[in-house]
Length: 87
Image (cartoon, rainbow, N blue to C red; front, top):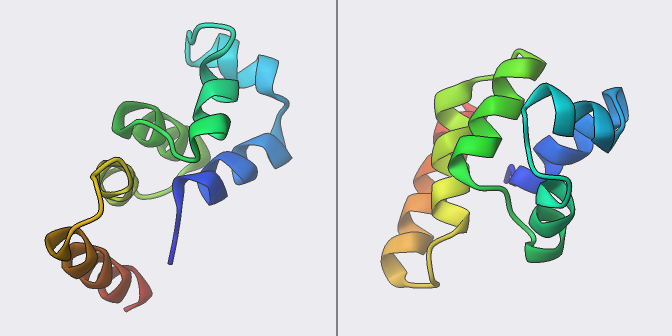
């Protein structure tokens, strides 16, 4: 399944963190904090996806689900989004 850390890795493979910080007008520690937490916020994921030419809506949904607490509903939705993105 896709994760926002995959999206961040793709962005960092194209340009270094200071580039994205300036380009997206982020605080200096925003990307480091996201990496530490293990997920991007929906807004940041959408912005990076847009810059990388990827599906913005998909990445916002993935980020929103990643930030949810573990539950049966979250598991069900993660499975659903994985089916949609692999189709």
